[in-house]
Image (cartoon, rainbow, N blue to C red; front, side, top):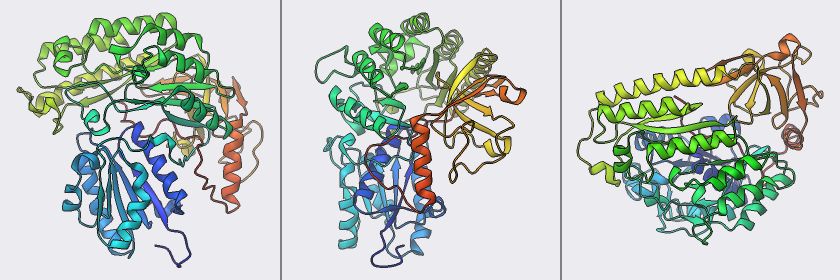
Length: 515
């Protein structure tokens, strides 16, 4: 709670769900800061002791509602000790459940949806003035989120939305209902945001959309996404371009050509499979079949031999037989994914699949899920073992390696997006304070690029300990690392770096854990 009448109110935004939610949370933070709020100190943020706590919800995950109400239950106790504290709930579950959130958790002050992020500061003020909850859910997009102020926590990489919404009708998915029909940004607007990110120090961008390769449908250019990839990749200062997620039915060879011919587009592809059974794909309304899916992967690998391909798979869709599941296992074996996000099907109210007959027993779904995970773990381990001996260039990240302090390593992503833990040379002082002092040129900062040789691997990561034996280890300082160091010096000097202009943001937050 603010300690004086003049002290700015503090905030924290908690994010549940996907990359789109992570990026929406950046907009929420940007709008709050534009309205005069400041981020809560890290210790207060961790315990949600802020004047405003915003929960950006997901409606896709199985336990989305229980996670929300579990969070809200904890916040009720905090709020009871902090007069004037406000709690806001936004995102997909807020769009779906609307007024029932306040019914179940009457201590919530504000509920807003996916289509009206811009109203958050006004609703908070109205709730304070009226001393009652404010619920405002728009039925269609009011303001394109990318036009809103943005608060990005990292300066070396950023999300850039190219579209919102989805025109597909997958029977298991509630996203089109919650985010609406696809709306595309004009290419010039996307490029302007990328250029703004570069001016702030970013060297990597990830293009976001529910179905990125259908980009251009709104303005009638079915080849627009391939053109956009080439254009973004040509922006001066950009070194890495990624995108997520495409849909196999709309994935065309011109996109493969753009990936292969644009050096800054990384050799990485996330291609959701969902099921290897054609019968299940039909029931899911996924307008491709397993043969087409594998054909796409074959063409990608022919054009980009080093591409790392990841996927999503759902186990236990209604009516899935043991033979259907066996077909999924065969496709996964043939596809050789570097990793996969695997899910047990569970009904989502409001989706057609929730009303289908032949919902499978939990025990059957669990047993199949475990077999799929075991298969993919083996494949991932084999694929990663094939990387041992390769020399890779790693973009050093902030917060990616949970054990870096204990293992005396730094962590980042290779060009193909594999997670790499790197041992630093013995000449680098143990545990340097990277945020408060000038660092020697051989000390990599978040945003810098390190070249090292992979020495061993696991199913979910690579390790490059070549520096420990006097092998390859080269640090390339970048504008992104310079921007990170400048921000850290400002923080150490007592500045807060609260600007809400577009800058860069983390690229791997809010995704499900690899299985």
